[in-house]
Length: 186
Image (tube, rainbow, N blue to C red; front, top):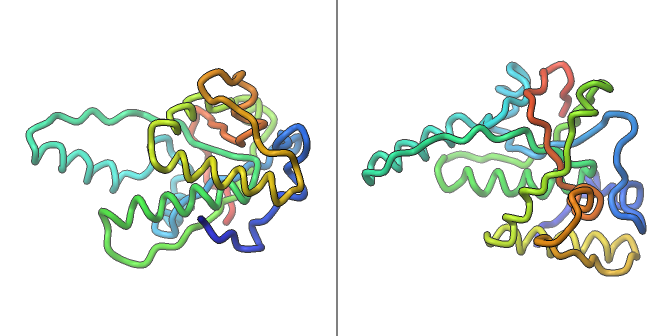
């Protein structure tokens, strides 16, 4: 289980009986690796942005004789620093398999103007979490946040959940646009 640093523990302010509060001030969070922060500061959050990881995957597939078509993924966001930290840890672990060096989880604050904030959507693709090991860990992490907040246990069937529940119950969102660097702070 992930040890959540107190600085990212915002559960008491963003998690209530109805789930995670949807930001009304345009403030969202994105979890990433310290190795990517300089690029993000320069280029912003770019869809499918971990170019080095994507290049290694492409080379690996070519080595074993398979073709690789890179998918253009959106920028994933959440309304909770705690959830962004979970995904930052996941990013660091995923990259550690391919790259040497000490990387640390980083939570970025993303300030969206009204126009961009209106483009944030619930990430129903999170149903795919059921198919990967990280998904089980994420659901356990979410359950621990609900418990910490003194709420009844999370009851959601990701295969049957309403679209909005992905956002309110498990804090999964995305925007299918790049986010400019001047909207981002660490």
